[in-house]
Length: 290
Image 1 (cartoon, helix red, strand yellow):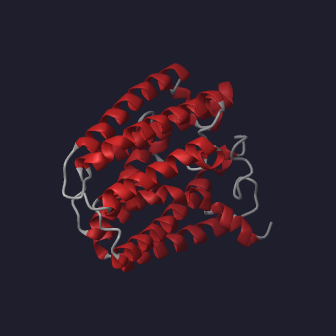
Image 2 (cartoon, helix red, strand yellow):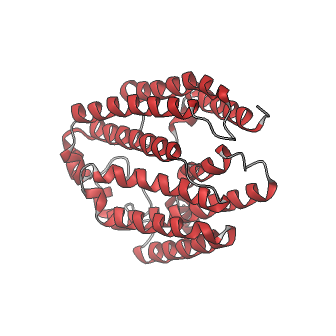
Image 3 (cartoon, rainbow, N blue to C red):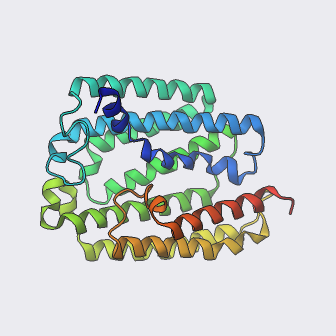
């Protein structure tokens, strides 16, 4: 594979779908139908793609020795030796500066949460990912910062429900990923990722049970809340959310999915259909007169 192809792989474009969280506040505040807002929001999504890729490159640089012993990660460009550490440093710096510049271009108000996102993820790669529980909470905070950047861009206050639902969903996906890693690696888990030695399958299953109940309750309460842009019929989307969460749990427990949460819906047609149907229903109920 060429160097350009290896750098593209290092950027992990398959994980860019996580940056769709930037669109949450513009979508639910009924601002996304405005062409200027849509253009700026999509530009901010692109900025976060650059920033997240900078973080992925830095993370793989620091983790390359550990990744060589991980069956899921040993073929990455740095751990396999297809890219030199020097090239990775230059690539990460270029992406980071370009990402911050693109954020400023989309709207200066989004720069503080974007800079916080970059700093938090670099701190995660260096320190936080080795701290039990804190590792997943840091991941959840990075999802929240994406949503806050989108809210800041369009000048709307981040709803408490946006805060709660984003955090709970990110924690659910993060702990489900830890469960998959622990289940796959078994006794070798701690040697591949040190923090996995602090978890157990039973503990993670307890956490997931609590998070599923909390997430469903929080989403249901949000659907029942009343704001100017809120449709009273959003409560009808609760069964879709419940099915989607249960389907994801089924895939984690029975199909050994969860290693890459952003790819799970793409590989499972029922889950993908649920996500698309939910997105269509929320968009229609948010933007049609009610």
